[in-house]
Length: 272
Ligand SMILES: Nc1ncnc2c1ncn2[C@@H]1O[C@H](COP(=O)(O)OP(=O)(O)OP(=O)(O)O)[C@@H](O)[C@H]1O
Image 1 (cartoon, protein in one colour):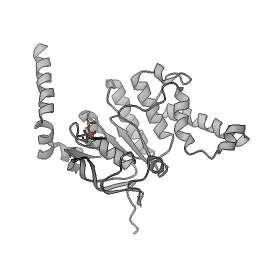
Image 2: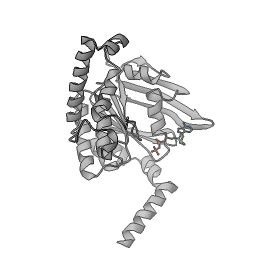
Image 3: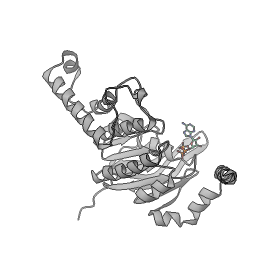
Image 4: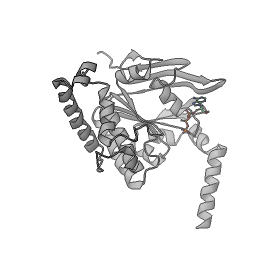
């Protein structure tokens, strides 16, 4: 039987900044209809790994394959065309543009229009514009966005902006969706909606890889978890396996910054 290649295959990935290896030998894969979380303490190299996968950084070692094709070191636009969408830790929306136009902006990358069509508003241009609008509404509905759609992004709450960013990524119908800290800044009910949304995205057939610090969400939504610490991969397994892994426990509890957080938490409880 012919072996089906993973949607994403990362092998021995490395990136150095000066002498610092931000990612130092990361290997994992993601299949269609799979939710993978990449976790690790602050500065572990998670976002750097995403940046290497999406072409924002050129890896200094290792490889990235998409549906079996080597895309290592290619430009972000080429990797996007190869079937990758992402969201960013600090959202990258056009703040003065409307909600609808932000989502449509993601789709124009794939339109069949040319310069002539756009200048002269040819039937092809009008037809595709109507199609983009329809699609944009569809994906805003899909993520559960209930706000107004003709208003500029800057009028939206943070949670709504995050929904728009995910809509824009989905509108490109990619095989792989990378979400960088999707739950950060969301309240409890928004996190519950996000959890359910990530599952529905997975059910579309998409491979979903997310970086997330909210452990409750990670443990509930992920089928597999990759754990990084100081650029290295220290574990890859099911939530239950990862939770019981001594190296993971050590990475989370054995660091000064986390110890500070715990002290603060203890202090907060002490005040109560
Ligand atoms: N463009 C860059 N130039 C220099 N150093 C960088 C660059 N990007 C990341 N780094 C360094 O690489 C290391 C890993 O950072 P990265 O942002 O990938 O970690 P992270 O796991 O995503 O952290 P966080 O959870 O805080 O977002 C850090 O030491 C960081 O300072």
